[in-house]
Image 1 (cartoon, one colour):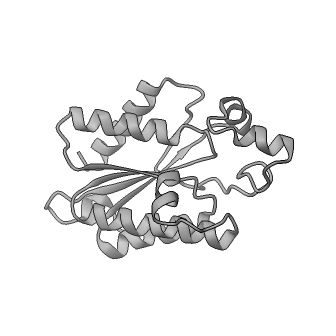
Image 2 (tube, one colour):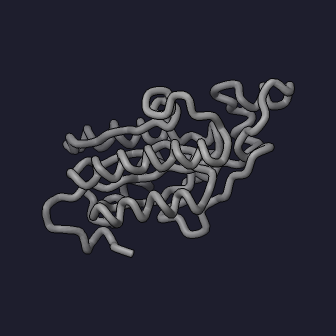
Length: 188
């Protein structure tokens, strides 16, 4: 596996892959980190939100294992392409399956782009209370099946580059944690 330090001397971008349950705080964290990076003068920052990409790039896909994997791989390819060209990509994607996340990591390695997997590790009970999109309420009422982490699988990363417990620390602390990771990995 290529480390970020082994990438070419030209400022290579990298993807920060934020994975976690629905309503874990992935998009909120990604947006706040993007704002911090831009404030620090990093111009080439892009937030890829899984829901937005699904709407525009993966419209028509359902939520079967195959469709979820296709969506994640499409996002991964876009992220790797951007990162290869010097962009810091913040990808906020549930990406429930370890095998597919590993394939996204390999896409990055094959393209010479850095990849950092971050587990936004918020317990399902907290996510259910937050219920940003009303998914947990719909699942409880029977309107929705296949909710990741409830009645569909979520395989937490076994060795992520960082674990961010958004339920135990402030947003500012979470952003600072990831900023420090990017500095330590030579992205910034």
